[in-house]
Image 1 (tube, rainbow, N blue to C red):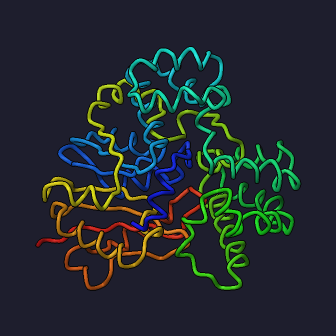
Image 2: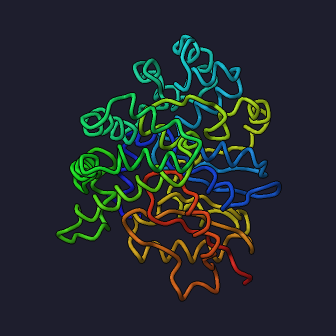
Length: 375
């Protein structure tokens, strides 16, 4: 991994306080289950915990960013020591309980690293930790500024109320498929602003630098916004709801780890999670051959050069168990297993495309499922 990217992730900014990759694609694409050894980018832990509910042998949550691992550790210890009502209050999903008092109940069970990180974030706990990351702030500023100039809170809430897709599409065209919304998206979702406020300019290193890049981004994000606003009933899209409101009205239509019915089982599975603060490629190489067979790699590859990506694909193909799977996304930079390595690791293109057609999240332009071939 390029040194600047390593430094970026190790700096400790909380980049994501929730995961913006549709958990249903993760769960259905990986097909994790009993006996599997799963590696997953930690991020804010939502998909780590969703995969845990599939009851694999273990889930290794890996991240170079210590802030992300601290959030995941906080969630793990909170699940172990709090009731469901207390847990969803602590992380900011629900209101009504004293979040600082809840944190004090969990604090003695945290590692020194996680405790130091959490101790200085009283304001984030009070405001709601689930909404406090860099990318979450980026979306909130767009909603309160750009989109707020076009629509009232009532119109935005109505956009999230539909069960009938035909009614939803008509409402979208009337209120959101407008030149005003297109202008606000074009003004806000630029390479410079995404790099400066949403992600980091070092994460944009391999984005093509064509002069019309912002025009292309504006078109892409409007089209993607239109898709997620019209392809799935909005009342069932927790990712759209999070962008547009920073809240969840219904705990049954959000990430599986937050469902009340799953909580007791989740408690029993928490010991199967391992936290690793290391670069992904180095970690895979450090493990015995066949130690892992499933991996959720987020959009890791688009931060890397083609040469580094090729080395990682080869490593996975040579070291994962035969039949193992990896999933990953692309946003700005197309990355996939090179043709000459497909005897080791083969794209499952039809399956990946069918899953991507169901993606409810705003960001990604492609989803990949690859399978390790017999050696």
